[in-house]
Length: 617
Image (cartoon, rainbow, N blue to C red; front, top):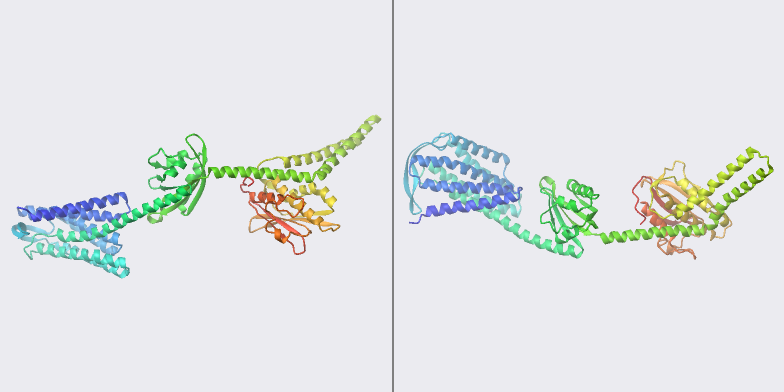
């Protein structure tokens, strides 16, 4: 004979157990899914309770029936507490004090039950009987004395639906369609099931009817409603996961087209996910499960601390971090990588996942290095050209001390030829020779510095001293062109930080251009001014070279710094372009403007504080 009771209660236990295992695995995979853990505990309580309730219906003695009721309190407490916690965590509603009171009351009943004989609900069970139920005979209690603390169980039975009502009302008053849907489709069935289970249980305990204990069936309805809601989220999550995979595929396709690779780093377990292109760029093709130490092993030792610092910075401060670093490939070659990443917020607004892209910029770095080298050589050629233009002045600067040395030497020879030598006069002649020799050596050393190719050497520079050195170079040229060059700088001007040779090249080029512009006016005497002042807002020093020439043609004012643009017939148009490159390499800027009184002014800035200078670029 087929037992319908055994089939129904066994099926309920099996379904509840499967649901519990599934949602326990969900929680194990994502520890933030605490609502799924509560659901799993409730399902486990329902599964165990179904088995015990089935045994109750087959109990043969009052003692056996009482022992089964004693054991039933454990899965019942797990079921009630699990459902209540699920409602609070998953639906986000219900007062905490109600939940805490319910949990405390159920825990108290569970403890009292352990010390009760035969169980918490009955002081004694005198007799049991059999009634027809679903086409077969099942066991019921016919004579028993209700426990003296049963009112606590009744209070707990009333507190549970009260908490559910609070959940439903809270969801309904939120006013959103989603909240009201959950109130009706989840809160409603759970409330009805809890009330029904409470009524049926109290009927048995107070022997108000001849029914078997039917505690589990109503709760299965509640669990089914909760399972449908959770499954709805699972289905929605599966759809979102499918859409996410499709989105990732499209994003990876776009990234591959742009020559970039995608990656992510989970800081909680150190695991790194990377696309095939990222693996190829980083040289990680042979590693199945990438960890952060695997990445650090292929990164250049000098760049590994920067990578670690950037990851920590994006985790702590959020936002976006960009970094250029080197990767050492298996064959020992070095590859330049541009990496960019942003953090995703985790629990309590803490970042746990960093996502980003990487690009191979080795060829770009090589091109930049070649361009920098070319511009450096161009700047050197500009200095050689400038010195060629100043050849007459430089020859004069060198010939003066050499002529003085020769004259003093001939004078010394004449004194020695007479026989009687005045040591005081001879000592003065020798001092003049030494002084003139130092003077000529300084000119030669200055020329050697100018003609030497090299990268920028950062050092503190006194702008007034720099300007005086430039004035020495252009002194003869200024006399020939009848131009007076005046230098006006405040005595409190602080030193700037830069390369002496390159900055003097900029100033010399501007002064020579100013003198050439002044000559074009045809006036007998012209002036060129060199001024400098501190710009407080920018933390830098501004240098200005002004002339009284015809000014810059309006059509060339915006393009005067571009290569091969010149207002001079014999000019190549490279001097100002090179000068602007030098100034920008120092972290400054350069511009020109026409003065209202006539003439033009060229301005450039140099930082006062020491900063890392780039190679001339």
